[in-house]
Image (cartoon, rainbow, N blue to C red):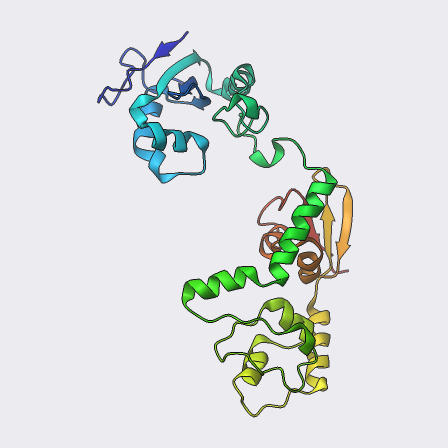
Length: 282
């Protein structure tokens, strides 16, 4: 059974003949012919909900279409009514029928981003090749070591930005030359030098504190002592890599350690398409 809504209506129930709380599958068509398939446990209220909520969530292509053409320019149809327990299966069927998954069928320019059925988007789309993954990791790693992310933040906050020169890794004498008092020191440099950011800034600001090799060695030993071994698994549970701490993961792969840490602590299932775990203490 199909039913088409009059999108120009101001009624709270654009489907007056359909009882409230009726589940089903619907189709939204943009003026350019692009298709979005969705499910709802309350078909009569779904289209009205889009009127109020589409401006609050810009993560879907559908909302960009609303913004471009206007809410009332889109056609809303009910493809079928079904039991609530069948919604996921029927949504997957209709998305495949219209080939509206943009990631899977980009040539059709659909408005869906996954196959439906409440399957997380991380499992959707064409897997990236090993070569592509390496290129992405290398680009992220290069951006990190060049300090690009910190530089953007510094500029946004109105601070000058400076990276410690490569030829001053020892940090035992003239490292403060040419570095502004308000310089932001990139984390990878402080790790490389075995110094905390506070110690580096103290030296830069000219405070009478001698940075000795003993301090450097002590900080390095402390970092090694508190470092946790991290295991990287594929989504099917195959062990892929072992890293000596989150710092090494970031250095090798250029990935955000915060998300990986949450995964290791059990706060999320996966990060960046992999499962991560800390080595358990015996």
